[in-house]
Structure formats: structure tokens, C-alpha cells
Amino acid sequence: MLSREKIRVAGDDYPAELVKSKFMKLDSEHIRFVLDCMQENTTEIRNIKQYLKAALFNAPSTIDSYYTSLVNYDIYRGGALRR
Image (cartoon, rainbow, N blue to C red):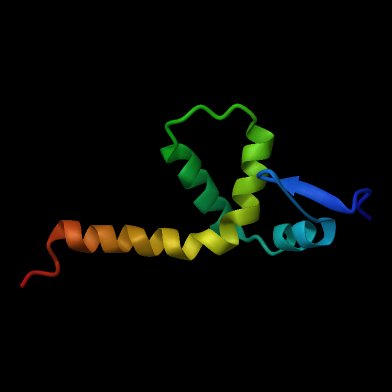
């Protein structure tokens, strides 16, 4: 059982049960996604614990759009869609 009703993630307070539920639904793809994004990060991370908490919390809602944008970039950059 969680001792707090709310948990702060990226400056916003969320119900503890919501945060727990989102973390329980993470799979290896979400973890890999967060680690890949961290590897590409060029800015200083001052509080790694807070950074990871926010990245993992948001991973399920950002992973699809991230990979879609990478595919679109590769398609247009590679010239696959020529007229």
C-alpha cells in the first residue's frame, strides 16, 4: 500500500494509484524506449531519479508518436517518397 495519496511527476501531482498503475503496465519496449531517449539526450540531467520517474510515467503515451516521427523522418530523408 502506498503511504501517499498523490505523487508528483514532472511538476504535477497525480493520484498514487494512477502512478502505480502506469508503472505496472510498463514493458521491456517502454524501458528500451526510455533508455534510447536518454542515450540521445545531450542536456545535463540534474536529478536522475525525477527524470526517470517522469520518462517512465510518460513512456506509454509518447512511444508511438516518437517512433512514428522517426519513421517519417527516415522516409522523407531517404527519398523514398519521390515524385
